[in-house]
Image 1 (cartoon, rainbow, N blue to C red):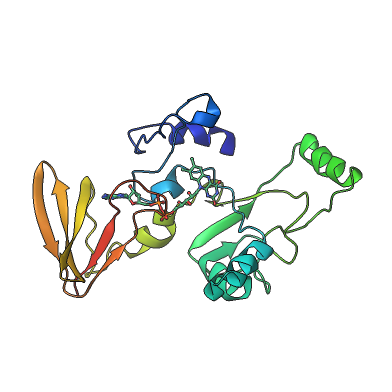
Image 2 (spheres, rainbow, N blue to C red):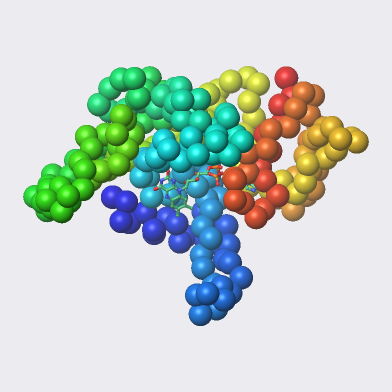
Length: 222
Ligand SMILES: Cc1cc2nc3c(=O)[nH]c(=O)nc-3n(C[C@H](O)[C@H](O)[C@H](O)COP(=O)(O)OP(=O)(O)OC[C@H]3O[C@@H](n4cnc5c(N)ncnc54)[C@H](O)[C@@H]3O)c2cc1C
């Protein structure tokens, strides 16, 4: 039920509790800048709406000099990441770690809303993540059997038993440690102690795109 997702989003035991500076164009109000602080990151506290965005936006980024962001280049990754409940087709994936379900929308008002959009002259699309993005539609969500399906559910939990994976929670990365221009480890704080974890191979930074904190590197030792 996405409407109640805001309960998780405002729970500062599982979010960072960031706030913006007073915004001059919002009567100096500070705005919540919510980011998840829990396994799965923000995917564990977000609104679960599965919407890739308009392909023309991706192509616009490619036109502006980022060819890897063209929709044609991204599409195989979108397909690879998902298991769509209505099955695989040229746009959708059927065997990926991230489950996506179509909302039941079984209240008569849901159908009336979609019909009203069409009456008003807007297009209807059967799958906004498929051939046609634009149009009134029944939303899709990141759930599996009706329950939130975070990136931790999809990518992390299934491989937790791997011998070369250690998951350490209650741990904040303070900085990436460098030897010259090469990242060689991370400095972490854990239960009041500060220690450095050295990388044998590489440090992968995945702390969230618009995150104010240092970031959450994964250290690849083996
Ligand atoms: C309230 C809300 C609603 C949203 N609704 C939707 C939606 O409906 N549909 C949608 O597609 N997207 C939605 N989003 C956006 C989506 O959830 C994010 O874009 C996505 O989860 C970002 O993934 P990420 O891996 O880049 O970062 P995150 O998911 O934020 O993961 C970063 C992780 O790094 C950890 N971390 C950061 N700094 C440190 C540090 N120094 N040490 C240790 N760990 C650290 C964080 O705690 C977190 O676990 C929403 C986001 C929010 C906050």
